[in-house]
Image (cartoon, rainbow, N blue to C red):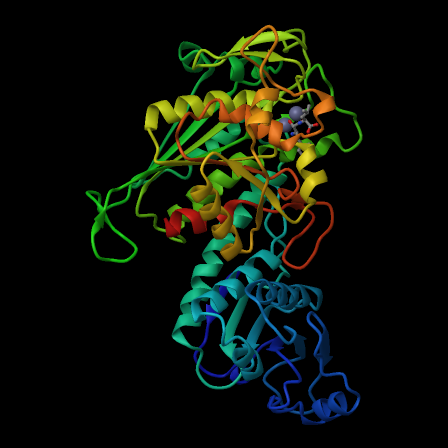
Length: 509
Ligand code: BES
Ligand code: ZN
Ligand code: ZN
């Protein structure tokens, strides 16, 4: 989907579909030529939409630049999230009516109601909404996207010139949206289409002048003592990989601080994502209903790749060095698989009782975190993982769970998620949770007692043993990584959750 901007008024463009986004009662709305009668009828019938998401279709009589007009309301109080949603409604309508192209006009009533928002944020939200709303999964079989689909959306002001800040934001949002769609495509691929080695091959494609790629093989991980990760992979005939992407900013030697006064020290930011390409649960086998959804267990890793896609495309240009690490493995039952009670040793020497082989995410992440922190000595670390079903019980599908060891960093990440409308909600990480993870026959166990009652925070507490003093935030994206139902700019399937949090976080740090 191409998002283009146009400086002349929306109604001047020839198009299959003109969409005007309005707010409030849009009394001052000047209907384009050809729509005078239709507009009068719509006004007198009270059909000009005022409620958020409401729409009205109109057809011209006589000469008009557009074949049809859709009015869509952003409601009385537009937010960036609402703008993203109405932009998605517009492109989905274009798809429904098989419009080859579409012009999206931002009416004055909308721009007046958006005075509390910065222009770049208005544009960004709309750009993202267009690209995300138009997304459809295409299998990697080489089959092309639907040739009848809308190929481009031209965004213009309803009247007058589109403001430069909005136009800039639109380009930015289209790029961010494309990186989120890239993550969705990878997320949606079935377990046999994306194995750990295939995920590594995808990551390699992101390398370039400023991004270096490498992937540790099982033999290399064995030498590094990653017995925890390898114990998960042992039940699978597919080889595990530790994928590493390393971004180095062009002008190194100290970035200017955000206030622009003194030079700040260049930092190293570490992002780690769970890349379980398929989680059957291992010997603690999952029930078969909906087991295919465990293709989404790689979504933390896919979000990390989404961030590097955004860096590669220029959607974000971090000031700091960014290291992306994706431990990738399958979790299957097999004669070599972990058995409940087995004791494994992580690369930092910590021993772990595997009491439930389905709590495997933490077993691969602990080696990834301990190794990457020791190797890259980051100033801050964020990990993302579809770690616990319990996070869905706690927060549903709208919010990712955030926990960590450094309140300042937790606030920073949650704030980045709020600005990106990719929201996260803090869960506690208490000493008592850490205590719960102490083992009987080893240093730690990979699950707490069912009597404890807490699930997500147990996962977070387990991981906390592998990050030392490094400021660290763990995002549990089990509830947000994919959707059962389509809504606004989400289709059913992979959502790309976490990509926009990461872009916003590394971009603002
Ligand atoms: N990948 C799952 C978590 C998950 C479950 C994500 C449902 C999304 C939807 C993870 O590996 C897992 O199985 N976790 C267990 C942990 C338990 C054994 C302590 C869970 O949540 O049941
Ligand atoms: Zn599992
Ligand atoms: Zn899992």
